[in-house]
Image (cartoon, rainbow, N blue to C red; front, side, top):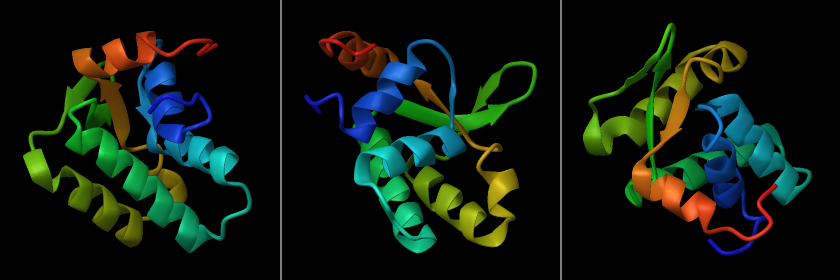
Length: 115
């Protein structure tokens, strides 16, 4: 995670300022990888989010008046994937939010020229 062109890095950098929607994460993956069809974009976005979750750099949740982290542990990525498959994608992509953890913020702050 050293290149700012890496979508995992861009998600963490964006997470320094605010929560990151799954829609924004998908957009950052699309920019990093160019022209991907919907299935490939979904797969790559889930892979990126999965790495961030596995490394403990973000936590997923919902956003209303405040962020509410999910208490799903290792099942969080499965829940994201299943929801994306079952729901209207445009709604689902704004129903899941990512919040940087302290280690995620530390990684984001260590990125040179992140802005």
